Each structure stands twice: as structure tokens, then as C-alpha cells.
Length: 494
Image (cartoon, rainbow, N blue to C red):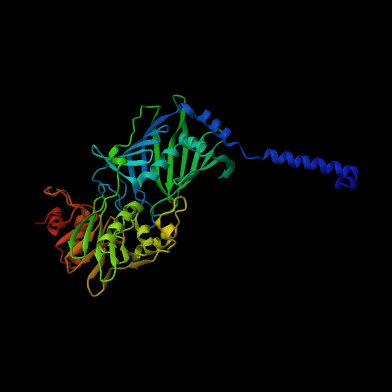
């Protein structure tokens, strides 16, 4: 006999009715259909299959991501006098042009010092290739690939196309008292994202996470507002973005072009790019490892090797470490010295740590590195994640001397720099060699000294003199080996 049959008829009727209400409620709360959500948004925003390319431009403010003056602090503020992006969804391509200048004096980035002008840059993407234009020449930039793929598919219309391609799931979420329909998906190996679609079916926000060679999986939040119609396509008038918890862009959009012409194709030189390491012997057991935009220096000790700098990303450091094993076979890499925490000079540290090297940094940066090295790269596991190792980090304050009985290595903090706090240089007293990054980058041979000496160059000379270092040659971590005289000429001394 059923349970309903044993109960009074009025109770049984009530329970049956309640069950129907529950079932009806379940149906009412079924998750939204993601394809329908995307179609409604594309209709409202004027996207869909008819939108193949889009160009938007504007100006505003921003920050140099990964170039903080103090480890763990906000990225240095910049003024964005002009900014444009051409996005080509059909061709998985992007071109970004920008002109930026410093809005605060301290911090890194390839920018002129405060008040000395702006930097213009052009970055490109097509498919699996990223490159920069340096004058008329394309220069491969594989370290930028993840970010540019993310930038392409986290535009308001791009995220809908990516959500459809990657079979997003739909849901609802309330943020700051406002309820949104959400689309959540992953671009495999590149990023994860959730797009927030408002009641007007406009993409209002994108939360995402992408792998990063320094920070591990890194969060980004992009907020779109003040949508306007442009030839039937709605596009936001303001775009704000944070990465790693700090602001990186606040753009006021002044121009939008719908379906402009696009001919973005990766040059063959970029497609054929492979990391190349050129080892130049600077002294017995000391090699300047160049061949790219960023250098490293290998120092051979009695029973181990030491590497000064592991820049950019896994790919660069993997090539450098292969050269290390070739030059000093059988000697383990015991130390990797990081000149400073800026991301272009630190992107290969995880690779070196995965080899078992202890990271030597400034005491100022140690706590930040302990935390940062513990962050995982789960979206696309890097060398450290695959190794299963835990990073060992040593911080130095002022000066540290390493001596194994065969060679002395002295590591100094550079005092008073506007480029970075916790800024290290390495000195080999027997060889009279100084190793440094960003404090001085040699100009091409026979270039006249600038009328106004660079403050970073002047600061380096001051630190050499204050520490009473006898320097004959400089092994820079950008550029060619030079004599001390080149630096002195650059600061106006004979």
C-alpha cells in the first residue's frame, strides 16, 4: 500500500499538490540555456557572425604591470595618451598601439624617466604567435602570447564568441546587489573566464584567470560601462581592468570602427622563432649568456654553478639552462640570483628553481617571493609545477659574499635607485667584473653621450664608488659587454 493511501484523503491531496509545486519550482530554477544567453547578448550588442573585426581607440590612465617599485606594491601609474586595438576574431589576431608616459617617478618599465617623454609601442598577435614591431622590424615575443590571446577574447564581443566556441555553462550570480546571467568557460591552456551579462543583455564584466610565469595563475577583472551604438554595434565608452589585484587600465573610448580591414599575419621570421643563447666567455669560468633581449651570466664554482638572472619565461630559461649544462657539465645549479623583482627579469626563475636552485633575492623581496613562488600554475603547469619542488628563497640585506675557496662572488644592494627597491648587482673582485640589470644598458658603439645623463646611470656610478669596487668591465643583463669607461662616458665623465 502506498504512503498516500494510508493518509487521509485531504492530506494525500495536499502532499501531491506540494510535490507538483516543488517540481514546478525545480523547472523554474533550471540553469539558463547558454546558447540562448549568447544569442540574446549578440542581438542586443550587434555582434554575432557578422562581426569579424573591430577597432576601438581612446585614452586614459593605466599602470605598468609587473614593474612595481616595491615588491608586492601596486604597479606604477602611467598616462595613456593614445591607445587602440584592432581585433580580428575570424583570424584570431590583434594589433595594439599605445603611447604612454610615467605618472609617478619610481618603478620599472621601458619608459623614459619622469618628464622625459613617452614610449610608443606596437604589439601583435595572430594565432599562436605574438610579436612586437621595433621600428619596421617584427620581433618575436612569446612571453606576451598568453596575455594577447586573453586580450582578444575578453573584449565584450570576443568573450561571447569564445564562450560559444568553448561550450560555456550558464548560471546566475549576484554582485553588489545586482543579479547577472553568467557564462563560464575555459580556453584550454590559456585562461578561464566568467562573463556577466546584465538585464539589457550587455556584457558588463569579465572575471578571468590566466597562467603567468612569475605570479602563477593570475586573476583579472574587466568592467565595461557607458555602452553606445556604433553603426549598429554597441560598445562600452569606458573599460576598466585590474590584474593581480591592482589597476592596469582605465580607458575612455573615443572611437569605434566596425568591421575595418585587417591583414594581420604572423611574419615567417616570427613563426620560425626559437630561443637562442650565445655564450661569450668573459673570464675563466664566467660566461655572458646573450642572444635575446635579456641576458644571464653563468659563474662556475668549485662544485656547482651559479646563474645571475633567469628572465622572461620558461622557454628562455630552458634554453639558458641547456647552455649551462653544456658549459659546466656535471655541476648542479645551486643558486640563481635575481637582480630585481620586475617580471621581465624574473619570468624564468620558476624554471631555475625547478632545477633545484636556491633563489637569492633581496631581504626586501623575500616575503613576496616566498608567497609568489607558492602560487600554482594550474591552467598550464610550468616547470616548477611539474617538478613538485618547493622554492627555497634566501634574502640578503646590504651585502653578501659567497666564497667556495676557488672564487669569490659579492652581491650588493643598489641603494637609492628610482627603478626598484631590493635592486641587486653582482661583483667578481678577482675578475673586476660587475653584473647589473637596468641600472645601465649600453648604447650602440660610438653613440654620443646624452646631454642629460640618465639618473639610473648616475646612481650606478655612485653605488660603485660608495662600495669602492674596482670595475674594469660591465656584463649588463641587457646589451653587450662594455668597459667601465662606457658607463663613465654616458654620465659625462672622461
